[in-house]
Amino acid sequence: MSFKEIYPPSETAIDLEPQELAPFLLRHLDDLGDNLSRHNYTLESNPSLRDYAGERTLEFTERLVEAWILLERELLIAPKPGSDGQWYFITRRGKKLVDSQDFETYIRANVLDFAVIDPILARKVKPLYLRGDYDTAIFQAFKEVEIRIRKKGNYSNSDIGVPLVRKAFDTANGPLTDVNADPGEKEAMGNLFAGAIGLFKNPSSHHDAEYDDPNEAADLIHFANHLLRILDNIG
Image (cartoon, rainbow, N blue to C red):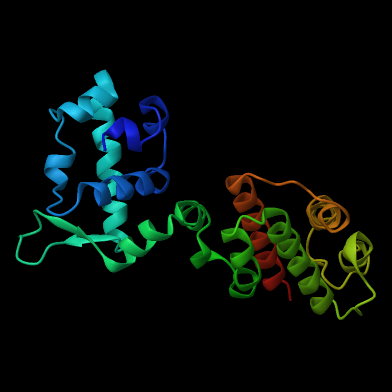
């Protein structure tokens, strides 16, 4: 199959991040069979490549090299034994990915780096996020923030939502309030947590939030993760 048959339009592909371009590259390499060469594949004079990318061929080959290196890093392709690194093969892990056609999951896994996420939060949201259930993943992320506030402030399970946050961060006597902070900072911290719970936890629990963008969902999960770090540093 040609580049045009595998990849999205070249003007779109050139703007893709390596983790977004890599599944198309892996699919094409699998179609090409054995004796895969990065040099030959990314050669600017390759007629199929030039027919696809036109005047932006060099720019696109740079994107391909980035995606190729990512496939190596993820052990989806590897140098052929005895080839001095000149020739590659698709690994068992790569074949499994190609056979499953589960490229969307692969892309989502690379958008959200679970290695830097709080381990409890990651355990709760990872399976939801990877299968594309973003609204539930976001709900669970901010529910975990609420749970940590409740535990940190020694509140009961009946204390929930924004009222819980307001009590915990009450500027006069809230158990999670920084007594050394100035009044404006105390109020701002309470507003930060109350706004997060009110905007991203409560709406999801009452109706379909309809989050369908993996990048937006990843941003919100990272935001919840940052709030958990703040909580961990209190007291």
